[in-house]
Image 1: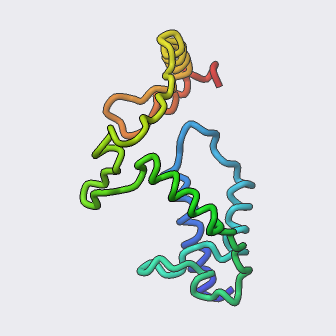
Image 2: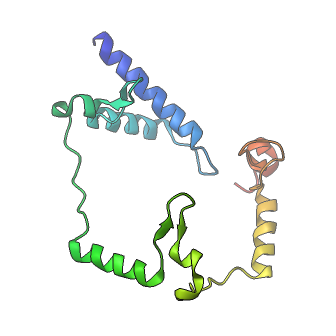
Length: 160
């Protein structure tokens, strides 16, 4: 293997590792085989960064060496027109570019009211809270994004 290929592989592995570390949540950790499969797929498709300054991926720098990405079918002209007409009727379009306010927010009396979504009942919220306490699926005070079951796994091993 030449030096640039090894460098690209190192960058790909680092990118995959950092992406998974940042996206860590309450889901189960990936197995070694899953990570290897993801890396192999990224190498096959060229979906890893090769230029750290510009953030270009291998399939962008050398598109002839990797399979083409599938083309996503766009909306038809009629679908776009129908969406526009619906947005105009509901006032769901931006009228103030600086604040991002929509027409139905600026003049709510001129547009039909949006249907109110029924929230959860008090009993449902209490049941969810009890379940979160039981499983430790609650944030730790003062920590960024860490939950009790992550900080104290021995306390919640019976739940998993």
